[in-house]
Image 1 (tube, one colour):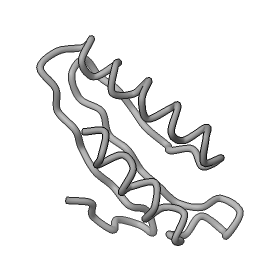
Image 2 (cartoon, rainbow, N blue to C red):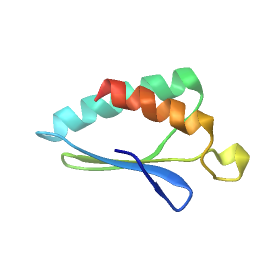
Image 3 (tube, helix red, strand yellow):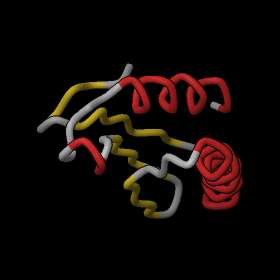
Image 4 (cartoon, rainbow, N blue to C red):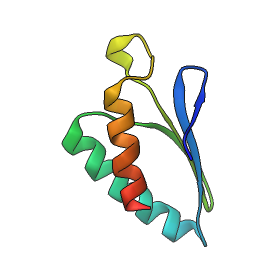
Length: 76
């Protein structure tokens, strides 16, 4: 479940290994580029943490973020 933390949608994804995490990130990158809305994220081994906010709107959560979160969930 996505959480609203500090005006960002946040979710942690845990995978079996680094390759699985990286594959997920590549798929998310393709969707983000297509939608011209890019996540803030970190990856350490099998963990990917994603934070979504809309920079153009002053770094707050907008419909763009909820839409991208739905697309990310569909990948995972």
